[in-house]
Amino acid sequence: MAVAISHDLAYKAHSPWKEFTPGLWQKRIDVRDFIQQNLQPYEGDESFLAAATQRTQTLWNQLNELFVEERRNSWTQWIIPRNIPNSRSASQDMR
Image (cartoon, rainbow, N blue to C red):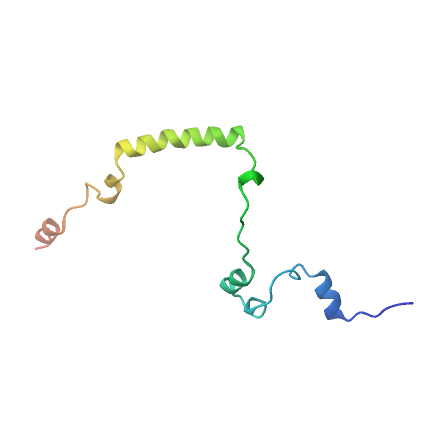
């Protein structure tokens, strides 16, 4: 005995979206609505995380050395470049 299943029912049964809460995101591109409809807070602990690999630890050690150097050099040197004239001297040069 063959059973006829409508295309819509078959699609819903195999759809990758079937377990998500419906919303405006189904009718238009609306990431905000998708997140609001489907976000489920994680209330567990960090036990699902894997330990850092040797490659990650090596990279992190390199970054930590660079952070020390960055603090020593002071980040303000990048915000206030020394080679740009102040507005007063620049306006005097334009006269």
